[in-house]
Image (cartoon, rainbow, N blue to C red):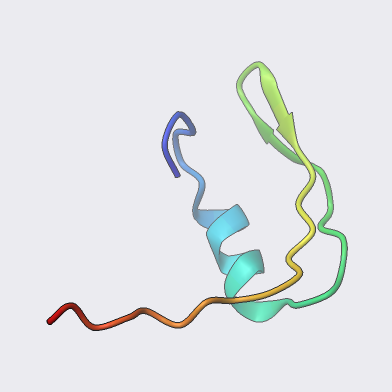
Amino acid sequence: MPGLEAAKDLVRWVIKQKGEISPVFEFKDRFIVANLVSIKEKELLH
């Protein structure tokens, strides 16, 4: 994720969850709470 170092735990949470609020993730001087509401499938470019 741009601007966040070592965001592995947040990315793991996103992969496993949908429709739930995340725990608080701390990144140095930033705190992130995520709410994943949908996933858009990757589109093929023609």
